[in-house]
Image (cartoon, rainbow, N blue to C red; front, side, top):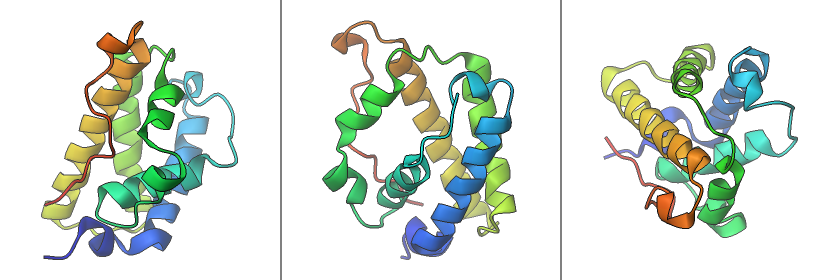
Length: 143
């Protein structure tokens, strides 16, 4: 079966998706509290993470490692409203980026983003390492 990565259109499509999503996050009044300024490497890092999660190259793990993403979220204290806005903006970006709109793909992406947003929220609130979500590697998402 084709990977989500290939079905999405590979790096080019995922980079387009992450660029659109990131612009939405920076412009959103609720998400702006978490995405306070443009970080030049952010879109590439988001692309690497999504690509690896969807069955593409393992650049995120090789170049950054999962501890990096834990560190990025720690101390952000992501609210429920921010988590929900993140998911909604990401799903809107799928359409704007022209990614496939078939139900199996959209369901897999929605579940991936919702799961990731919960992990990020938990890690953003963790005061100790024991309070972190137990996930310690890029999740491999499939259909």
